[in-house]
Image 1 (cartoon, helix red, strand yellow):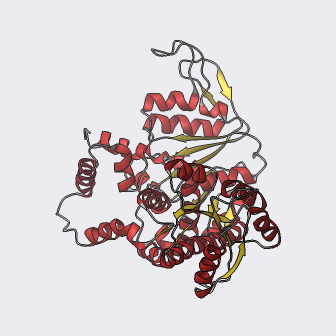
Image 2 (spheres, helix red, strand yellow):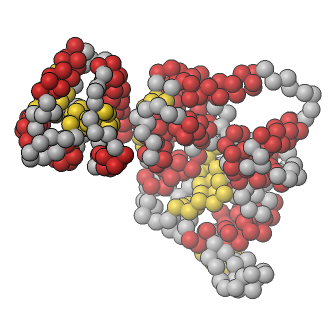
Image 3 (cartoon, rainbow, N blue to C red):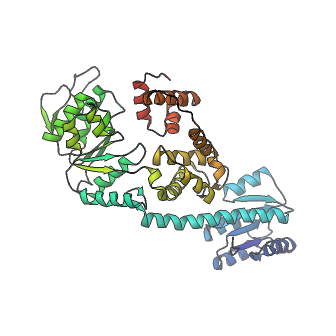
Length: 451
């Protein structure tokens, strides 16, 4: 690291300030000194100090706390370290409460000062680099919350612009966690319907009866608990877009109802006798192979052709590894901020580990992995050690002796195993499996697994 960051030492004891300045200059830093708070502020108006060491007790004028508060007003980005020979819990609490980054006690040791300065400046350097990187990401690689520099994804984003103002139905295909809803939103918010509603429905999260009511609404008294007329998602999306996620999981009856809506743009509420007309663009998504589902008789061919007017296939994350550093940096900044963790970046070794992993859960899994690392990390930067468990998972997967059983039985056993490890916690199990909770609930029902 180039030691070009200026440092200020504020202490009324000349011997103390000059000694500390000498230690820091030996380490190669540029150091100024001031004998009181006012002199320190005068220097700070001319120089943007990275670190200010301020003595707590200074006779006459401003004391250390007052000097620090004024310094933060003049140079808000400066790191303030309070120094005192009179250490008490109260003074420590007051110093940290008013914005001090560190609190050290006299007599100060050269090695302690060197390590402290090195750690603070390393963090500042990372923060500075991350600001530049975030601006670059925002400017070059972010499109409607989709972060990418992958050529195939760039083609998809260009297509979203071309079809944005059409009414044609769109079918988005891709593995779980690839960002199908983000692409749907990019289509909606790039076109003429952008000021109208975007309504999202997970078709796998509800039973057939509940999903029918969710999509088309219901009349008062149409079933137990229906105390009044309720509009469905299609009515709420009138003029805008409805996004039907996991469309491959709907029942045969709902497939027929949906086909009629796509053909006629009209439907009946559950228990109703009056037709409801809507102007809605339909964007559907699935992680299933719908042509295979049609072939096996599980999905209507006429509905498939109605949905598949414009098809978009999103590549899995393992086929666009150049996006992993961009996505990882984005998730670190957002999640660390949300959790209030002082983590500013991710190391080169950690990024290499993430790039080498195959990401069966795609971007959603990457986001979950970053969040877990941030929660458990005790450093200012995520290191490869923060992802050691991910390496173990990869090795365990590679060495797994697969038994001779049907694929569905393998999936059932995997779900049971993960649920046992997570003590029945569905959210954590879904995260470990790299799938949505709604998808996991659907599989629990399908395999009759209790938890």
